[in-house]
Image (cartoon, rainbow, N blue to C red):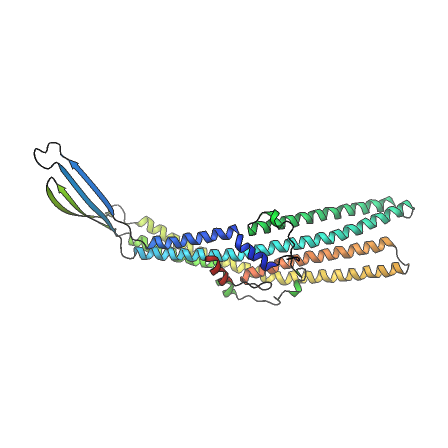
Length: 406
């Protein structure tokens, strides 16, 4: 651990402590409990009655009665309720799987931002040192009459700007660590000084997604949004069937026994609602509209997912090309700085020229890091589009879901 935790270790910690993941587990448990509820038959209702006749005149004075009320549901009602509950369990399970994936992405993104900001801060520290050396040289040159106060003021302004950029980078490190702490369910103080590890994050050319072409159908089938939309259609269909079945009322049987002032009486009551004013047309119309809405929502989800896949497929190659261009610029400016270093050694240049060239080369390296960070973000978007790891630690979605569901 001296070199810091890697992505797999941070993700394992997030799985153990993430509040969002714990909430999704609780939602899945709630859905599973709903299956039990849907499978239960309604309990009968026990009714007791009593009457006392004050002027009984030698006759038994009490009338006592007991009745049990049974609800006889229409055929298929309980089966449909159970089917809906199982579909809702599928939705909750898919949501848990989606939360696992999002937890992986959130953990990696926060770690990436923190590592990138830390490297940026280190590079800015070197740039600040170069600016300080340049300012010191300009001040000496100005004092010796070889330079101007304008050169000194310019060097001071550039040093101040570099210091501010370093402070901003430090703030980004802190913000990324805060996001990482929130993701894994720990206070910031618990990981404030923890070393972070992501080797070669600034080398997106080593990512194994060259010429990747997503299988759109497979990518769609892995998305919980699509599964949820499909299950909502199934639920809407079952709700419609239930509302249509309610055009025929449920029966209530009420067998009873009465001790009526010495006489024993057996009773049987039958109750049902009378379809005099409506035959459940309103709820049926609502169920039809809900089914139509669910179908249109599925189309919206599919369109959104296709758009995400298209965007990811275009963005990643373009980001890699921008990084390659930034790398070429950095290498070119590094060579120019080396030329200035040789010229200074041969007496053909001066110290300010060399420092300026080194600062320019360092700034190019900073731009290359920024391009690498953008490429990593677009690569993560590509992974998210196909819902499978394309680099880094392996991730078995089904095994992770099974473990999280326990």
